Amino acid sequence: MSTPHTTPARDARLRTLVALARLLERIEHSPQVRDPGAYRLLVQRIQAALAEDLPEDGRRAVLQVFPATAEIHENLHYAQAGLTRVSLDLSVATEMRTAALLARIAKAASGSGA
Image (tube, rainbow, N blue to C red; front, side, top):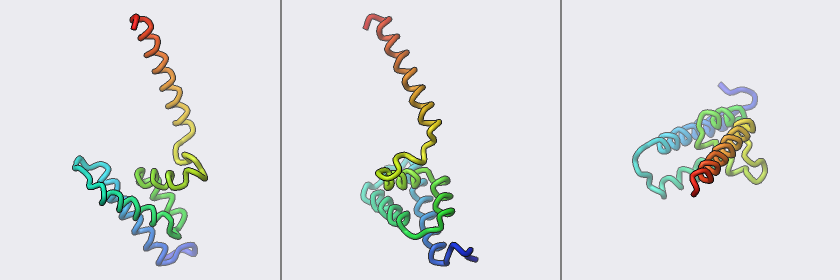
């Protein structure tokens, strides 16, 4: 049954997006070699599905559950929003760990006479 903010058509589009996102995750985690043309077509279909009129809470749920689809969504909206789905705390912590690692490598390299 539809809520006031959804319609059967919007619900159907959301189910299509979920099916495409699920397929992309399966392909992403498969050890088999991907056909580039088929992969590109799947990504294009996901891009088109993301551009559709969807229930916003459903769209958010899909992006939380399916990381590859969330990455496509983020790339589509990068010019407007940047990397909005990545936690700022995680990004800062990663950058700090990287800087510390590079400092240790530089120190080790200078200590070894390299």
